[in-house]
Image (tube, rainbow, N blue to C red; front, side, top):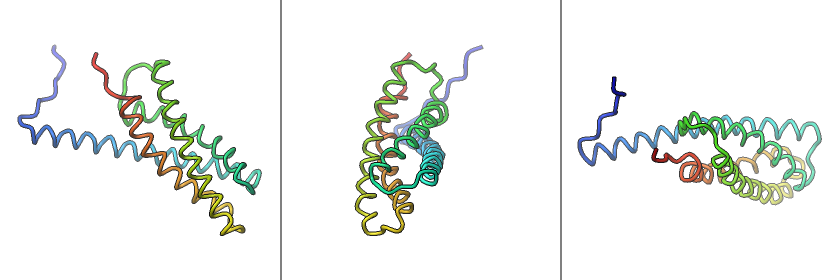
Length: 161
């Protein structure tokens, strides 16, 4: 029995609509995975802050680095199999490219967070815990854009068989 092949669009408008729906589905799954990753990121960050306190931007970088690693590991698994529906076995090349993209976005994420934390912790010295969390939101926003572009274009792009 032949495998079922999806029907080809009859015209250009239908093809564009199908492509748009596909992209919207990917974006919705990416956003869902991003929410889960963000929860993991904030959970680990706040556990570290509660356990050790936070007084300096340097300590913020250390804590964010640890929380980011947890979130990035989850990101690889969920984005590969859920968002981009990649069915291929993980390869060294794919994992290397994933972590290269993730590392670039990591530095942008932490840099944005560090700048925000440094600026706003001076304005709100009694609320550094809240400032750290608000700074993380800014970093995560930059991170999301960079990761989506990088993952879609370089890591989980569909390859011809």
